[in-house]
Length: 450
Image 1 (cartoon, one colour):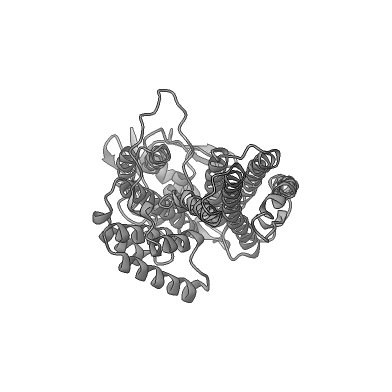
Image 2: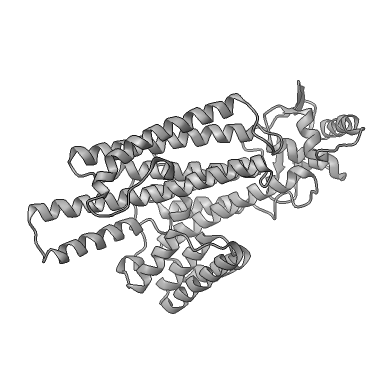
């Protein structure tokens, strides 16, 4: 039985005895193989990982020596030679990263299902596996991008655990932790939204609004952008003293045995999951007031349709953000302003967001009219088509050794074909949706906007 750890300084043990690998390169090789465990890693890729694009002439011989050292330390049955490279065999539960990802995934599923208490516990167990910054001990080329990806996964799990704690009414105890997190990660909007909400629920509305003002200044000065729509909406609701902000998520109902667990919600908006409902409620109230409190059938139908249109437009804005992220990631990898692995990380985030959109769109109450039903169906088809295209782009980027011009590959060809299919579906959607939206707004949507 072996145990491997990469969530902090790289460590390994066999039968409870630590493996001594004092030299930097063999330790780096172990880390690189662990990140691609149970897969054949080509020799050319390992040389790139350990020495970069200009390896020494002795790189091949040195690599063989490091492999021999690892085999002696962990056993020849673990590190196999499989053309065109090597494969490190790791069993279930032996790598701390595998355990972390399993616990984090289970925590997200529990949170999406409404079981905040169990989600907080599971996510806390995942975070306890971390012992320090990942791969920080290495200067090899692979370590920077891989370490950044792992750290981003840790932060996402931490933010989700905080979401669960907020849903449980633990806002007061979270303020200090969130203030420290915001100081460490000043450009991440999600912890700022969480801290605003924790402050507001702790009776510190002025501090929450001041944090929004400072956030706006920071994002403007550092990135030249405005806060995201979620933060803007949170500030608006605080200014209006929205009573929904005071209420943590209700206690979950016990799930039926064998019932499917919903897909995890979009990470950036877990704290603000009730925003869309509140906006819809405000819209309906405004319509009722304008109509002089009329409860007639036409007024009710109009309010229902406007609520539906507003929700779909919110989905389109979120999808628009995803489209921009995909374009920036693919373009960045082509122009070498972004490594392929960093681009894949961004596309994986978009994939999670698309899953959340599909879930929300499927659960949407749709007015019983032919136009609304068709628009809802085509929107779901559009999101699914974009999800498929994003997946092909991720596959293409995952197979690239380094950044540069796109070239030709089956994965990229499939991505372009899926993108074209998504655009065709989006055209059908906007043809169905724009006449509905035109009843309430002047804006119309185009297929290349989302």
